Image 1 (cartoon, chains in turn purple, yellow):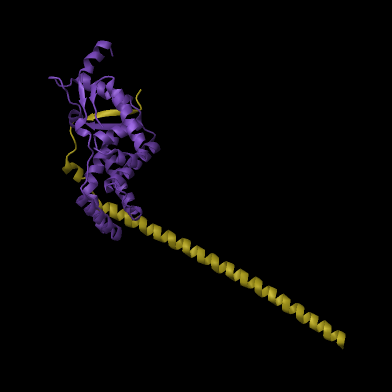
Image 2 (cartoon, one colour):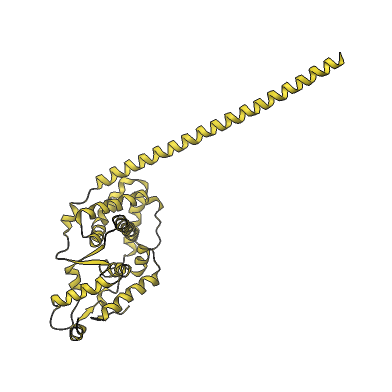
Length: 209
Length: 87
């Protein structure tokens, strides 16, 4: 990439300010969720309500990390099976139940890649990418610029990409990210800032945490 | 070379399509199967434990009995010798 090209890309902005706040649950929602979990602990048949509630989210999360519909369905099923088997061990610790499911799903995906020894894939929805990348200029991002963004994301370490994906595509808080990835909250923040620093080399990034 | 691939998907998968992959019945069936297997495994372990317990208690009892018997034999032998000596 030439210097002039880089200078041109610098003018483009990735506006992330609308993603500063993570998905937040009200106390009522947390109470309702805890009730569902307690019901499911007493009777596995009641787990169906949790399954229906979180299936789509978990499916999208796994699909984004595999880009294979059939494999995603398998891993998704495995995730819910593991959750059902270990439900009695689950305890509410100030995080939504979905964070626990995402942690199981993330472990299942990692297990799959470790077993198959394949290169990891992040399959991002174009629609969402365009939502995240906002141009302050009059012109929209060109194909070339999108390609540069993909290249930048490709060059990021996988652990950094994991945090980036959970923050921007799942809207998870740092507390949830640290729980899902089993890392410290400061570690999660550090990874994200590292990713943003890399992105800033080619794009103008607005980020106020 | 990147450490992972980045792909762009044209469209987000529709809820209806995701719904088609839902199979709660299968999850429940697998759960019941694994919990049944776990129960059988636990029962087997319990059975082995009890069998081992019975075996050890039996062998302990026989050892105690043998010891008692040999003690009795010893005492009766000593009594016999004593009476013989007295006679």
